[in-house]
Image 1 (tube, rainbow, N blue to C red):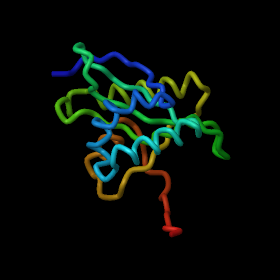
Image 2: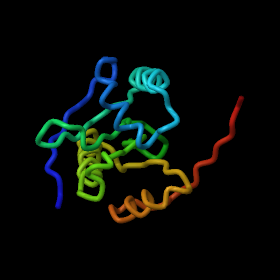
Image 3: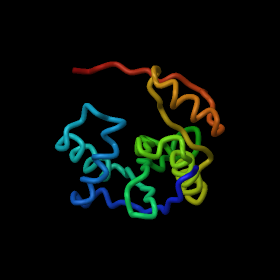
Image 4: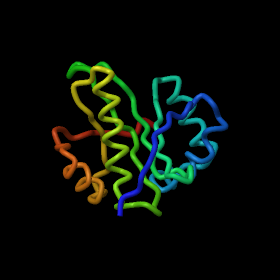
Length: 146
């Protein structure tokens, strides 16, 4: 049974909006404290990070996406930083609806495609993205500088 949602933009510059979002993003980023999450959202906001949430009929957060519109050498893209659905509604269409919403926003912004990174061990997310037409086209390398 799918969940009916409506979409709403969240102003990441408004710290008061972070509370409910922190609870939802905690499922994806459990290592972040509230203060770390606030700092990330505030700095991300200054760098163009955007947020859309999916709310169910009772106004509860069912899902969210953090994304950016970027100009790259590969063309204009929508980069999906995070996509999360509430554990209460997982596998009920919320993640797919949020992904489709971000794709539509990217199209309206003139983006050629959507890109994202996903941790190597997150097989469930990989299968989700592949089911929704995303393909592995690159490897992301990283090195700690500390």
